[in-house]
Image 1 (cartoon, rainbow, N blue to C red):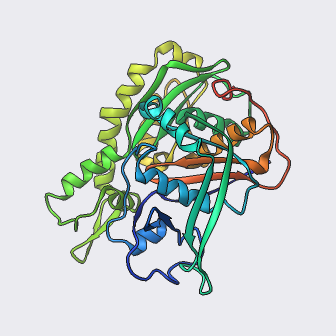
Image 2 (spheres, rainbow, N blue to C red; image 1 turned 45 degrees about the vertical axis):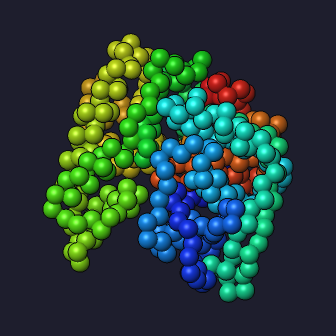
Length: 357
């Protein structure tokens, strides 16, 4: 059984003016309505907006969360059977605070979503989609990542390893054993945003950044260049410097504070996941620090593992109904939704805490 994922940037902006024929498909032309206001979401907002963004680590009761959830659901409404089973999550830093609010959000069970297909279809119109949620669960992000890692690698017996996830808003980590997570080793701290903001402060000394927000700077950070005042500024060396500083002052102290020598001795590998695992500067720093005593490996499709883990957790709570299972990761940089292809699923795992086994 194979998981299929779709993603879009986790940014939005109020839609003003004409947005017709501005995208090639629904995923790139998401326009949804909340209350009486229309919003461009994802790539449509990045192209057609002026200041698209979102609140980092938004609470489930905030507008940001609702809009991104609607945008995610529109993209899978015709791909899954209903009523659905859905799993979502939060970093450890906000999990206990937001879990109950997220459960209340999903407990509404019936979601009517109004969206506009004219953004990508000349014969499109405003449409409505009704989604029914039967079962739901909120789990920690790192648990989702570990489940996703095991399912992606295809080894349900993968035990005794350290997982570190580099997200935009947070870095998460913990040690997984055959009995579950070692909570003593679980941490949550500043994500890639820390390095991006430091780079922005340096750039502001020399350049006018045209009031770019942190999400727009994140795009430039990934590309390694920024265009300002009709000039392209190369950011690769500056990016290396701030990521090296981020690793030295944030990541390395976390690893020293939360893991003992005995933990490293008992672990077979450190797996890096999350979108930040694509930065070679970070992965090289990890390899260099742990070169002599534990292997470091970037997980396959590191940015999608949380969503895939949520999907398999949904499969468990749905009583093995793959076509009704959905995993939704409303990340600070990207929103990633996972569903199953129409094939037979191999179900394993039981409760949330033990699903990583």
